[in-house]
Length: 248
Image (cartoon, rainbow, N blue to C red; front, side):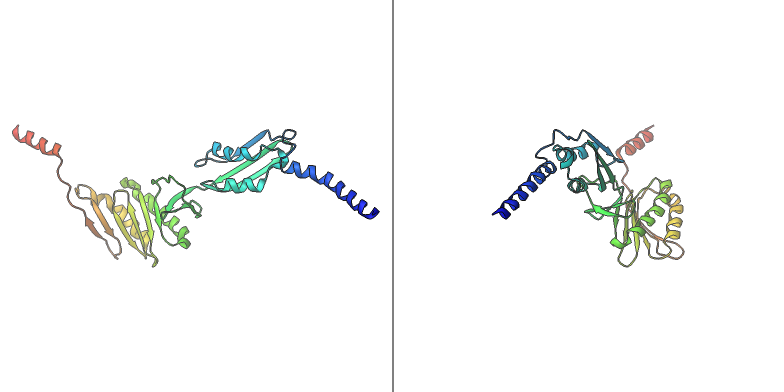
């Protein structure tokens, strides 16, 4: 009997010690005694707003310093669109520090993903801006596509054009689409020289040419093949101007 009493007393003593600690850690008590008073959010915010981060954090810190679940906070913040990584730290007695690192988008990757400047693929957030170029190719070739785009993009700026699409086939053949709708088939070999030769000649090819260049095939040793669109119809203003001039 005495042994049972000693066991019961020992269990009671443990409960008296553990129960308050358990209650504090779960926020049942102590929230008003050790409240979180300071929230510091840092990061270069371009896509994720400071207010959005705070809206996730604040409900998780209302039960006091000891009840803040850092792992759950990291998971919740990491689930926000555009978020690459999160650091969360508690500083005694009442401070929570949150550091957010965003993905820096370079291009759309197909229809459902995006490619960062560092070659990382991540889910495309809702409301995706269509001003970013579209990349289509094997996932493993993302670094090559970044390098190809970095080389091709400045070549056409002098003509006032942007590279809207970059495509790499499973066989390693490159092609791109310019902002005026011109399709450029580059091929697999000597791609940099072919692009440079074409971009240098492009202003001369289009100057005074009323038709739009629809397609350029650069897969030739000493030249390229061009396909032109139809000649645009004369505008009404141009027709009226011609009539008035003939009457004068």
